[in-house]
Amino acid sequence: MIIVMGPEATQEQVHVIMNKLTALGLKVHLSEGATRTIIGIIGNKQLIAQLSIEAMDGVEKTVSVTVDYKLVSREFKQDDTIVDVGGILIGGNHLAVMAGPCAVESREQLLQSAFIVKEAGAQFLRGGAYKPRTSPYAFQGLEEKGLEMLAEAREKTGLKIVTEVVDVESVPVVSAYADMLQIGSRNMQNFQLLKTVGKTNKPVLLKRGLSATINEWLNAAEYIMSEGNYNVVLCERGIRTYEEYTRNTLDLSAVAAVKNISHLPIIVDPSHGTGRWKLVRPMARAGIAAGADGLMIEVHPNPAEALSDGKQSLTPENFELTMQEVKTIAQVMGKVMA
Ligand code: PEP
Ligand code: MN
Image (cartoon, rainbow, N blue to C red; front, top):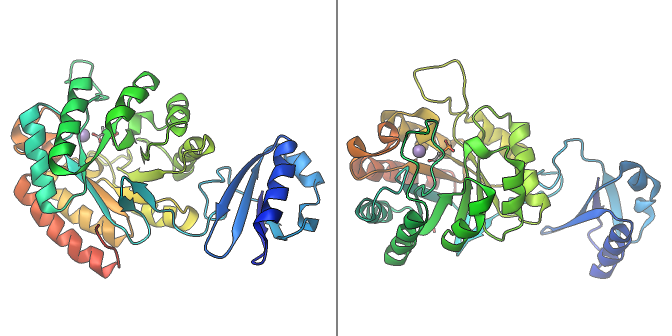
């Protein structure tokens, strides 16, 4: 249930209600919007129903939230969430582009990639140091050595670092280097991992599961937020369908749907979403036109030599072209790139 406070409600009234609810063992979450304060309550439904919340001072009304995720929903928070990653904003009218190789392969490859994506206007460098590969024989990543390379690239370019954390054990080490933690598609329902990143103060990029419904995906975000970490950005990266021409089916309707039902920022990954570099540029444009708050794009200095996902990686020239077009569409959509 959510409590909508009246426009004239005082801080004191809000505190009295919050204290009363927490004393009863209920979990409360405060959302202070531009015009309204909203208190979300999670816990025993019968107990909540017995309280005469609408009679409490400052309360305008109570609304029961019908969906099973709450903190993620627009009902709980009407204004768009803007996630701040070390000064780079994602959400609202702020557009963010995360680009770089699928995997960190070597110092040279990563630094080259970093300068390429920086030059074209991206604000984040992506690159997996820990790689969740379908085959156990495929390149598994450079692990902490890769994280050190990412940190060096940040130092040299000023780009923010987003990189995947694949298990609970490596959350501390990845958090020590990264500006933003990526939860990969294969881990979207690794609930222990979601809870663990929810206990950190690092912004989280939550990719949609390979076969996850929007409801399951938003519930995964709820896991993170319910632990206290509200800095969650969603990433649509395509889902598995019967189509075989593309690696996945990029579900851009999910962008529009998420914008309706959630306040969280959402970005689009047209690289994993299509699996084909030729489709990345048009789908990047389409993602922004659909209302996404940013993009994640795989770029490699030499895609033919890439140790992973070369087929879907853009060359420096193609990434530059993509960025020019994206910037034009972003303007039409009223988005700015900081
Ligand atoms: C990645 O971003 O390199 C990756 C592994 O993506 P996903 O989890 O979407 O497959
Ligand atoms: Mn990849």
